Length: 579
Image (cartoon, rainbow, N blue to C red; front, side, top):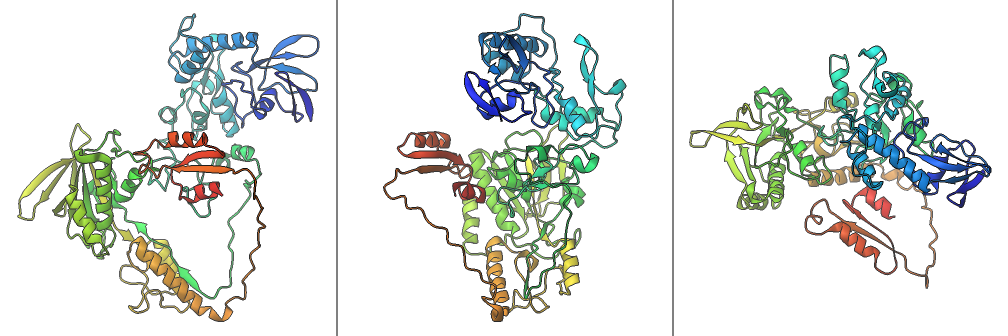
């Protein structure tokens, strides 16, 4: 360990560390615009300059790339250092006067407007993009020119296929000078590269190559998407491994097949949502304001891409008139060969319309076009009637097509009423209530296992044995047995587990392990230590209560050691935080 003085305080760091790294460790703030943990420091912006006394004289060094040594004395916020940083910020602001980040920094240093001639630029020449591109293994861009002619450019000013539009340069650009749209406008590839779509958010939001599918995923562990990860494309990058403090990332891992000797098998592969893009007449693939019911679920969710704000995708404006089309991909032999009813669509459409009315208020018009409203479950009919009372309109008609209105983002719908009249209406947004169908991979699995399927490719079971497949010892639950909602799927799962357990009765308790008893600490008489977790419950609580204010108030109460607010306190990730 190397010991030295930092702002008069004795600190220690490892050999080879830089001043900035040790300062961050001890909570000393040193501003910088060109530093990134994954990249070799370059000292380009000079904003991290500090005062160094070596025992004989004082000099100024860039803290991001100056290594520490024994006995040196460093001061990070002297008057001279402050004035030097102020001048640098002023020069940068003159170059890029409209960059919000620089405006905020200038305000911090008391700069109203620069004294120098202003330019119209938004690149501060920090070099982060160039170094990150090199890190990716491509070096598609570099700093070219000298002095006032310096800029970020491609070699010889020529666009080539060397750029793979990974977006790494855009992710580290501190000013927003580089964007994926700008990259797409320059690259020579025939197809533009789009952000990685989040499967959980139905493509309405992007995700990273390293990601957790959703907050309550099982297992709740980050995964690397090999298909888009730069390292698996070029052999470069490895930024995530450098950031991981516990060395959990192993790029050499391969998929492996694990064989298990079991006595029972329960099949619960679920379903796949019907893809309505094959219906050209609905314009789902061509118009952003025609969405599926699954996408609507994410829009209405407080943890979704719009944080629960009911807006349409084309222009992010609040929707004023929304329609739902029922039986898309169900009860339709002409267009998709799915003759069966998907069972859940009527109720989830009603639920979405009711929640949309809660979000949008009385100004929002919700209309559901249907053939039959199959509200057959407990209290389902009551919920249906409640929806009608709340203002949701129900129209018995199967709409044939959706026509975009030229010059606007609105949608025109023509339909035949029950009396035979032709009506035309305009909507802001249309939701397709898509049905449930079995994934081809599940069909292949059933064939490999020798299990009989029904006409709709659901698992064949008997009336009085609803969880037993045609093969002894293999059970089924959930939507693979037939379209059903969550409560019925849970009932099926319990029945399947009980049946599988009964088949294994002779082996019961043979592999049971005694749980390890964790000794409890006696805290009798000690000072109470209270943790406060205030739940937002999406927008249910947050819509009527100032949750952050409640959390801050709780911090002032006696014995409160920790306080925070959560989007959902009942979620698995919050439960783990609480424990």
